[in-house]
Length: 289
Image 1 (tube, helix red, strand yellow):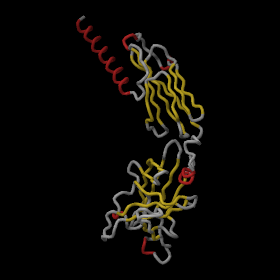
Image 2: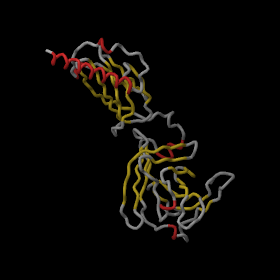
Image 3: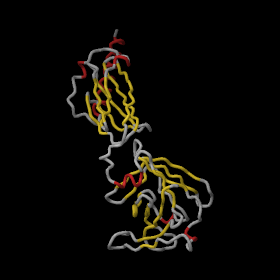
Image 4: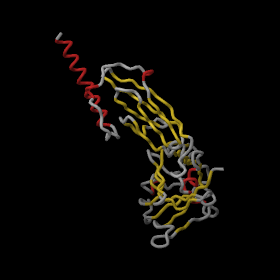
């Protein structure tokens, strides 16, 4: 009898600890919550859960319709990245990206928890969210866009303020013809950007002395106002020639030019091996044919 009573006390403490962790860990815990101790001691099956996850345009509305439970939501994109979680009974989420999303709904009672899943599709990107024309020029929406080095003038050098009107704004962006010493004329790889469910980028980089390639698929940040393109998660800008060791950062780069047919990106040459001064190494890309 004593052992049975101790077991009940231990199980009750575990349950209360779980509820506390959920309440504290939620990103959306501002809604008043009911007395956890007043929940009925029942056990649910997945078929007993009643909830809705409805997408309208670029808005996702989640509602718990199962009585006498503590709700817990989590939702992920098609790659499995968790985008958020909540213990609210009802919530509205802005979803700027097109794609398929997995919504997990868990109901907690004194008898334990049970989880059900729904797949929700956002049909298209939020036009207002990506209204700046630079998004279409760089990434071409959900379809994506792939860039390769423009070997007619693949590389040059410029001042740190280029293409500004003042300051360190010089540039030398030569044609490849007559300047073949810049780099070997070969397939240096490609880099692609899209807005299909997330900020997706894939960089395929050819090695300096062979035709071997490495590939990384990660995410990116495009800061239009500050003319910055940032590769996340270990990805780096596509490059050619023997210049990698001259710059310490190939992930945070300056957007110098962006049109439908031309992309120039600059990395800071801050550790030149021949002792030359700090400047931008400028790479020139064109859309992949």
